[in-house]
Image 1 (tube, helix red, strand yellow):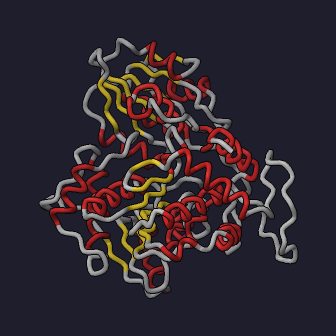
Image 2: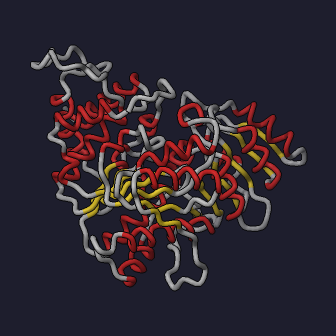
Image 3: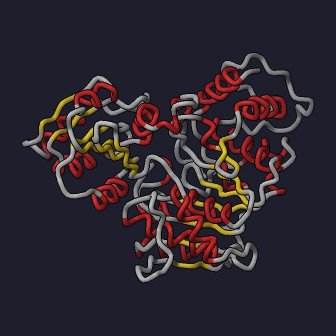
Length: 441
């Protein structure tokens, strides 16, 4: 197997979509020797900001001298972004090796496009179901972090928390950034229901930390923490703090995320000592692309990239935008609240270019355009065939904002950011679907 074949194997797993529940992941982990039992984790859930918070925690603990694993999703361009040690992407060779090992250990499963797989020796054992891509990759990451002897793993949930594949671990701390409406078909149609799913990462006796302030959502988190006898720390950003949020991550919301990361280190200080100097050094060096990332092109044109893909994310983007009417390049997924988001963003722009997202779930640009025209009849609203075409159309505009989907941000980074020039483009591996709403434990 080479790297291309390994990636094709992972593509084959997409046919199984996304499936809430822990049985299959636990089974795969057991076949791999339960590598999670060799590791320490900080488990991070939330609607928005969890990736930035993970990046801050990773940078802080790396500055403190630890060997730190980082597991996040989705990736922006390369699949290898999902699994990192000390911010070094997993190598292609290790992807090949771990995919091969996972396929061998999970030989009772039959991923699509992988040919006939022999019957397992223990055929009497109940088959928990073919693994989804995320379940398979979760166990890949656990194996890799154990092999790499990581002293701490920053472990981001994929979807929700309670029934997310990452929830097979027992962490040092459970961290919840915030709760907002997103993925309602999977997590519930109210903030309280979504909060219950996110709070599902809270474990008995394990400290929990959150920046959530919504009374309803916070009430749910407090109830779950109390039921688990888990000490809960509520965090609010203190503007008087001497520790500054990372300069590379702009926007007032990053101050809150930084406060959450700092509070988590304080909660764990008796287990992993970290000094204020190390916290400051870690925050000064943190990098998390695609979130209010400003790129200045040789022409002087400024392009702001932000993966705002739900209403709460758009609110955060609006709060961070400088004065002046930018050109907007928008692409969104059809299963998001794109009408509302267009209504929020369109009034701020003088020109709006709508593009398809490289996903089967893309919203149609012509429909986005109609929503934008309704919200801002004065704007010059046009559809573009693709992102390169939109960028060419906006080449003479001084300030451009690209937003609406992380899929679109990944495409923009592949075109604009030199850091992504030499990595494989596997953005379509982010595609998922499946059966929503299961109550399986």
